[in-house]
Length: 155
Image (cartoon, rainbow, N blue to C red; front, top):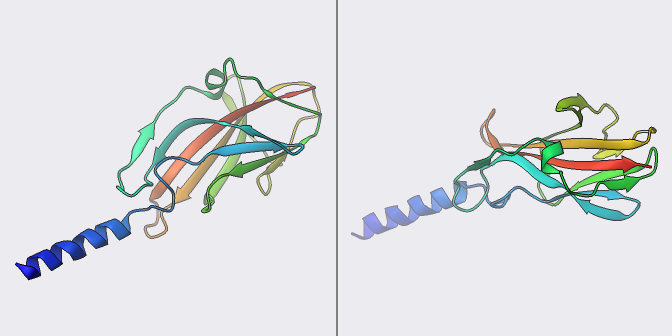
């Protein structure tokens, strides 16, 4: 009986240690900093494997324009610097930023070191930040991915 109990304890410890707790149970909060002020983004679609249980969860949401409907855009000056911050010790392995016009994504080429410059032209611009956390042990497996939406108004 003691051997059986010890085997059960070892098995439970192995299962508990193999789960990805460093990511937490939900996708992290992402903010945009402009001129020292932080603004929240809206979490879009995601699949997440974090948490002590090791179970995954996926959510599919509407596009950025619909997701941000009724929310105030971040007001910025032309060519203002926007710094994106992910509130998680383990940063994503891959990050991409896209501007969305009429549901058509446009890759942002000046997105470097989690920073981007606002356009020169006045107007409202919608963005999607796509982040992916690769599994540290198994290649081609994701521990989590999420996209975040925000919009700016250049005045």
